[in-house]
Image (cartoon, rainbow, N blue to C red):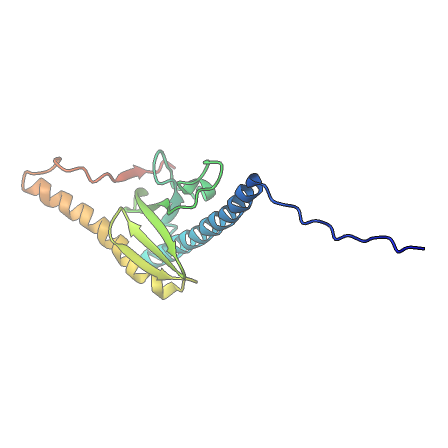
Length: 182
């Protein structure tokens, strides 16, 4: 009796759509990793900035970078990639609502995060990038906190200075300040 022929199964040739789907899958993994890392850094910034500013009250919230906001954490809606369907692989922005008074007034700042290797580069209101090593350690955030603090103080002092010298209302910095109703 003759031995039956055993043939190797032929390797399935991938068509072009399979190549596209494989590339899109890798892109999707990286874009989710990017979002997860930015979100983790943003939540750490929120918590540690509040503790750095004042240990008394909740004074920083994650809010959308644009549009209406209140003094609350918006979770995934705090990021500019929220609701865009397929998660884009790009720098991600989010808003920080920072308490600026004892009457519960909040100012929104827009932060932009860009990951490169094992570092996150964060800019406040399109200012200079501040490098934060990953994983984040509390002390590494102090230069960012100082930049946020200086940015807020500069807004008020420059506005008062322009008013005092009769030159106010001529430049638009674009801050959102809102009082929270109780």
